[in-house]
Amino acid sequence: MAQILAPSAQWQMRMTKSSTDASPLTSKMWSSVVLKQNKRLAVKSSAKFRVFALQSDNATVNRMEQLLNLDVTPYTDKIIAEYIWIGGSGIDMRSKSRTISKPVQHASELPKWNYDGSSTGQAPGEDSEVILYPQAIFKDPFRGGNNILVICDAYTPTGEPIPTNKRHKAAQIFSDPKVVSEVPWFGIEQEYTLLQPNVKWPLGWPVGAYPGPQGPYYCGAGADKSFGRDISDAHYKACLYAGINISGTNGEVMPGQWEFQVGPSVGIEAGDHIWCARYLLERITEQAGVVLTLDPKPIEGDWNGAGCHTNYSTLSMREEGGFEVIKKAILNLSLRHKEHISAYGEGNERRLTGKHETASIDQFSWGVANRGCSIRVGRDTEKQGKGYLEDRRPASNMDPYVVTGLLAETTILWEPTLEAEALAAQKISLKV
Image 1 (tube, rainbow, N blue to C red):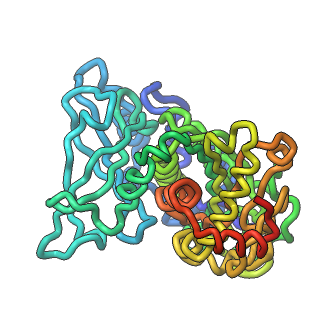
Image 2: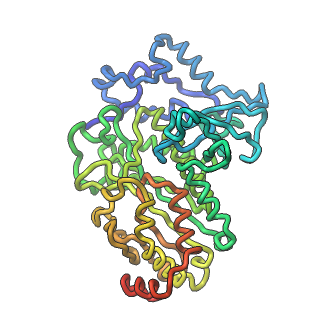
Image 3: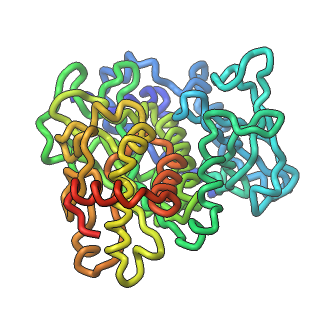
């Protein structure tokens, strides 16, 4: 069975036991991951942390780690802000650092910045400047202290949102008075898959072969069932430290696949928190020498795909009589099924097959406690007559700004014709 391709054995021997409190994500967090390293692979592997590749003296490595974990707070008011944005693919994340003169409490206190959009596929070389607008800040769990992570969206120098800036439209939707009055809540279940580097095969799987069939891995424990728990746990703590509204995590049905949940979050905050959580996960897997993928169907065949189920409710749904409001929302969603599917993630047709706890991509459906439907309503919601719905269609690589904004738009702002509503209600057996 293939084991995690962590940093080399030489690097493992250099790991120190303790660091200052400045950064909670030190190398010692990977100790139990590293202990699983196959010795034969460790000798041959070149997956070393590059900064240490030419070092042979333990003292040098220790000094480097001390500098990385150094708390500069007693010596300067200046902080480091890591500006984060979404790249040209719409799913890749980019970031760069700058010094800020003093600690800040809100994104509005930060200056705009720019980057070379021609290097990210977001601007032509002859007019490559793209402007970053700070939108949300989080504590930096890697640097600690007063240092921050800054979620940004991107604009042209004239102030127009660039095509990959999906936050701008979502913010407009969530600022509409009708939407604001409904206080939309989102709980997003982000699934992801961990891959061995170089071979791009799931963590814990024999290279070029398959593990035992699905069944024992979901929420499983044990060296033969759980692969990557340290990464999941480190990510959980990093999110809590950063101020992300993470609510849980678990191992998934396919081995090497995990999930974390964020929410309930209100409006635009849901997208900000998911994107920041994804960034943290990218950084943590980078440190562990593991590849993260949000592909909705990373392994073909009888294996579960990866989704991003989105739980959603409005104030009217959460109040008495809310189940009728939920059914009306489901009706609207059925009428805009194609629009939603087209915006719910690339490659989703490989996942939404009607198998492995999914509905067919071509047909809208809903049901109570049915995980094979497009929209699932929980038993408690049906029993209490109020609550929320779960949209099970979004893929793991969906843009949370797009999905949350579209849900609010379709269920609060969009109104179908009476004729279309009646036909749809009959088609999906829904009495409203």
